[in-house]
Image (cartoon, rainbow, N blue to C red; front, side, top):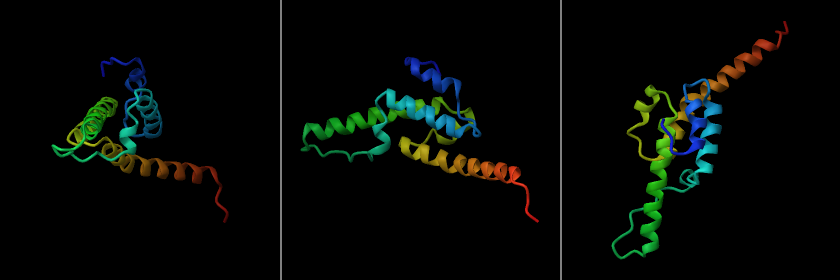
Length: 124
């Protein structure tokens, strides 16, 4: 990902491939926090304001869409090509990260459990 933001180099060097899910997630959260767009993970997409809605509502919706799109670019740019293709059609960044979590966090927990079992001798 050619980057306008020097911090994005963190994500360039640590693209999500699967086994590195936890490291990728930590780096992504650092990046979106530094870029001041983390809030799109914590706030649901505002509804489209009506024509008579205050300008503040229109501004909030526009800001959310802009920051969500920026965050989506960071996320997709920091994934393998296969994962990009699986998530490119998703609009809301929190949906993308939830899907990634469902895919890889379970694999991580299973691998960790198997590793721990391998360290503990059987008691028979």
